[in-house]
Length: 269
Ligand SMILES: C[S@@+](CC[C@H](N)C(=O)[O-])C[C@H]1O[C@@H](n2cnc3c(N)ncnc32)[C@H](O)[C@@H]1O
Picture: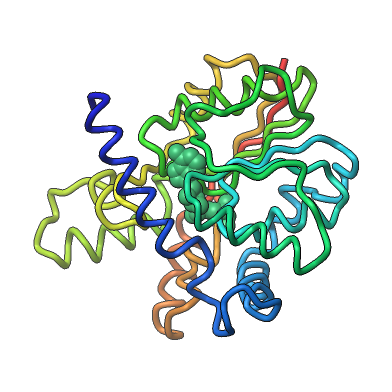
């Protein structure tokens, strides 16, 4: 993809998330109120409780943490609650605006919140004890560059915690079934389906091998790369018949092995 195509794609990605910042579709209360954010939080951690064991917010008390792609700030609030020195960036003005409102409602202050691009982080090398990014860098056109940026700004000995989507997952196959097979285009690939039908345009998902290949080029050690079966793979919001099909498929195909979330934890060398 040339630079103009990438920048046009990024504009579309920006507009998608700027219109409906991540999670805000689940709030039923008046925007910018405490109840609005509690609706979002209840929904998120109700379906994705494993975020707590992945992020380990409280363990990083007092540390300098950068969250890349804060969205509406559901995890960012946890960094603030845990007493981290929290820095956050997002591509969208709307996301950053939400996080400002949200922290103020709970009486917290970020060290810094700004609109920025994860492919070009506005921080010097070796700045943070932890760099955390949950469900973000597979949306940007150059995911490999974003991962390299995350590693660059992390201090030597610091932790990198990143979740990206896993291509060989039940959810990806369910999407293929719906948007390729049932749409009469069975020749379309998983990559194509995810590019056009998963959230913002251009979304990608990675295999374990591809993830290791990206990490192998970067100064990281002790990289743990694992997949996790999620509420989405289990078709959690569908009726019992669909949930039953998903349960059997997960059991036959190896559970977490075919999960939608691909969790990376590594230490910067
Ligand atoms: C699925 S949401 C995740 C948000 C948040 N991490 C969460 O889990 O709720 C994806 C986020 O990635 C952000 N994003 C996409 N491309 C980006 C880029 N190039 N730089 C920074 N943020 C980006 C979007 O604006 C959006 O807020």
